[in-house]
Amino acid sequence: MRKNLTLAWRNIWRNRKRTIITAASVFFGVLLSTFMTSMQEGTYSKMIDNVVSFYSGYIQIHQNDYWENKTIDYCFTPGNSLLETLKNTPDIVFHVPRLESFTLMSHGNNTKGAALIGIDPPKENHLSKLSHWVVEGNYLKPGDDGILLAVNLAKNLGVEVNDTLVLISQGYHGASAAALFPVRGILKFPSPAMNNMGGYIDLKTAQNFFSVPNQYSSLVLMVSDYSEVNRVKHSLKRDLADSYEIMSWDEMDPLTKNMIDADRSGAYITKGILYTLVGFGIFGTVIMMMAERRKEMGIMVAIGMQRSQLSAILFIETALIGLIGVLAGFAISLPLISYLVFHPIPLTGEAAKAYEEFGFEAAMYFSVQWFIFARQVLIIFILTLVIYVYPLVKTYGMKLTRALHA
Image 1 (cartoon, rainbow, N blue to C red):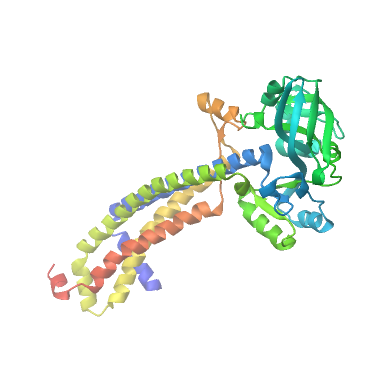
Image 2 (cartoon, rainbow, N blue to C red; image 1 turned 90 degrees about the vertical axis):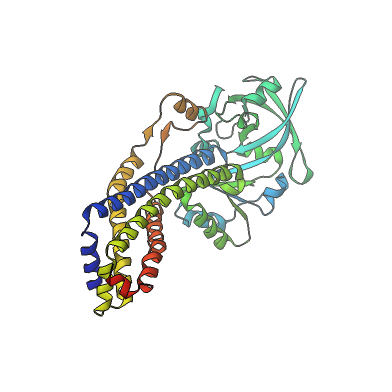
C-alpha cells in the first residue's frame, strides 16, 4: 500500500500544471459549497431561534391529545418525575409554563373571540421578550389582574390602556368563566398574524379564571441549539414514556419547516451543478492521464505488474488530487467561517429594513457544525469512486499489443 501511494504521489506531479488546475477546481468547489452551506445553516438556526422565541419554543410538553383538541380540559399538573427529568436534561436551558384557551372579549358593543394566554411574566419575558413589544401601557407584573392585548384586537374592540374588558369563556369541565380585566398594555408584534392573536394575563389569574389551580396547558422548553432539538425530544420521550405529549417546533409550525426544506432543496440543485462541473474537471484529467500513459501502463503490465495493482494506483492518484483540493478548501474556509460565526456580516439598506420589520437582526449568520465539512469530503469521495470506473474499465480491458504500439 505504501509503495502504491508513493508511486501515485510521484505520478500526479509529473504534470504539475494539470494537477494544480484540477485540484484548484476542487478547491473552489469545496470553498463555495462550504461557505454556502455554512451561511444557510447559520441563517436557518437564527431564523428558527427567532421564530421559536416569539411563541412556540423549541419543544412543548402537553397532556396527551391536547394539541388535537386544544381545550382547557386537557390541562395537567407537572409531576416531580417530569420536573426532575427537565432538570437533569443538560441541553434544556429553561422551561416556561402557559395556560391557553379561547375566550370572548367584550367592550361596549364590540365583542371578539380570541386566544387568552396565561403566562408567568418574568419567565415569559425571558423566552419571548414580550415586554419589548409593549407600545402602550406597561408589562404585566406577577399576580397582576390586568391583560395585555395585541394591537389589532385592541383596535377592533375599541379599547385603550386602563379600559376594562369583559371576558367570558368555559372553564374546566364545563365550569363558567367570566371576569373583568383592566387593559394594562397594548402589544405590537412584527408579525401581522400575532397582532390579531389575543391577550396575555398572569398565570395565577388565568388558573383562577378557568378553575384549574396549579395546572398548565403546556410547558415550553428552550434548548441550547436547534440542532439538539430532535435528540432532546427523543430523550424526553424515552424518559417520560407515554405520560405526556411531546412536540418539537417543526411539528407545531410546519409552515416554517416546509419553507426551510424548500430552500434547502434549491441549494442542493445549485451545489449539485457546482460539483457536477468539478466532477467533469477531474474526469477530464483522468481521461488525459490515461491517454498519455497508455503505452507506459502496457509496459508495466507486460513486465509483470498486476492489473489490480495498476488500477489501485490510478484510484489513489484520482483520490489524491481530490484530497489536495479538499484540504486547500478547508484551509481557507474553516478559519474564515469560524471568524464569521462570531462576527456576522451586517446588512444595510432595504434588506436590513425587511429583517428588522420581522424582528430579526439585520445580519447574515454562519454555522461551523461538523457535518458542513464532512459532507464535502463525502461528496468528493463519491465523485472519485464514480470517476474511477473509467480507469478501472480501461485497465482491465487494455489490449497489450495495442498499448505497446501506441
